[in-house]
Image (tube, rainbow, N blue to C red; front, side, top):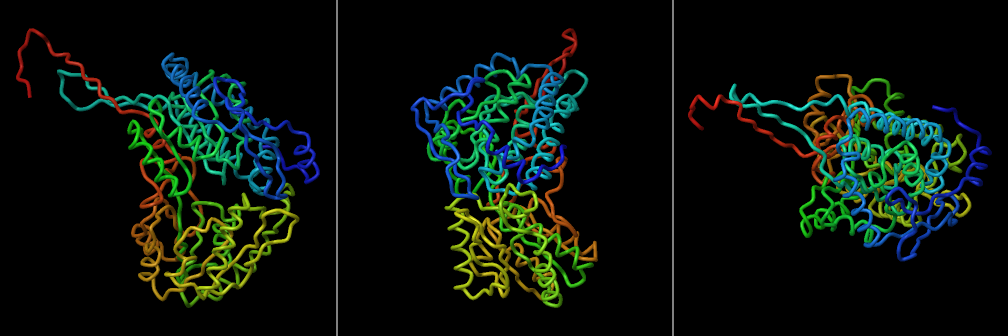
Length: 508
């Protein structure tokens, strides 16, 4: 991975880059057929960056038609797995070569610190794409133990036309999580980026075609969820929608499926994730480092953010003091400055939502011990990292997903109480447990209703581990790992009778 640039070098790139603004359909950049566009805004300045094509039903119909033609032609779906691998690896190389450009496009639209995009998002996206590319010719089918008179093959075939609907918090990384396994297994893929963050996805589509991906195999339709997203969800010739985003929108895609062709729906939705710290946790300095990373990384705009700190009363004050000390290492400011660890939240709408939760937390009796205010940075949407103490489990800020830089501290008196509080949520995406007693930590990890539980650290595993949730955090499949390939394929049995026709036998 290339090294970080200076703030001035990033700004020069931002000022000189050509901005991709049109949808990509059948290998070509296209305006919406209606001519409609919508604004994309830099959340760090509040200024309009460009106008993006606003695709309607006609554009989605065209993309699906081209995707189906590509799939049925076999140009990608029946290509040798090693050929698919070769093209995907070439895409990785092109993305790596253009990493600074992609990072700037991502930061301009999302407000994310470019430090994170360059050091986390892009490297992990490249690794994800390469991992799935390498898996293409290494995942085997099966045979069943059905006796000597038959050959019973259990094989996987690509679904067909897959729609991937992305969130705005990790545009490049979530794109890789979706298209890596979807393309590796031979599908034709249509991507709808979030309305707020389109340009890095559009640029990657250009690079994919440069890498040799056939026309119609990867297409990007841009536009609002209630128009473009709904058109994908309702389309009778789309075989699957893989969605990452809010639980409310996830419900809509289930409804679209029920009202159309019962297409497969895979949902990765919200979270209200607990971080349990018991009184025997070792090295509170390290614990505080993980706690801070878990809730303030990406300004808390992260579905796996550990936004509930459930800590034993004996060590609560010491841990909270250490967390406040660690926050000094998280400067807030201009996202294009690689010295900053916190940037702008993605939009005015999200800014108002987060500030509303902070106001409600105060009104319900929680105590702000740091932050709680908008950060003055021109006309951008910046919020100070905020820590609430004296939070009780029934408060709104302890129950609803804020999706911002807000930590709620809840004290408990035992491990059993900690588990009860952790599970007292409609979500179940991720959790963390800190304890010196590994046996106890493993038992707690087993008892927490969440898709990923980390012990004595914060994280989401790596590309080899599945990621997804319980309860309202989603279902239907998992991102990452070989399990991600399962959701983009159909399981088929091929049964061949090879018995000697001269020998009669009983039929079950």
